[in-house]
Length: 113
Image 1 (cartoon, helix red, strand yellow):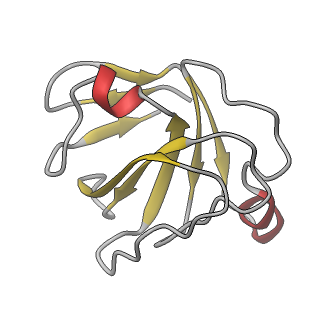
Image 2 (tube, helix red, strand yellow):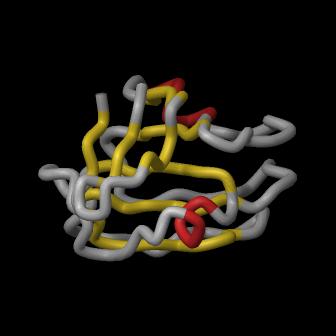
């Protein structure tokens, strides 16, 4: 899947996978070695994440049902618990630095295709 920030026209990911079943959401990025630039994991439904059993930091976008960014965690290190956002319906996990490099911020809208 391709993820584009509609608010500023930047491409956030050109190769995102979706975790939309119980087992895919449960596994997420656990036990992976890295997340390459341009890749991501779209988790739906989801309101919060953790980075237990991970060996690298990630950026997280918390998204409403309308794909508006309602929260951000940048460079979340392994063994942490992310914030809980009641307004979030899904989460996009990205390589650390993606949010800063794409000038993405709360209130922006995304396209996920």
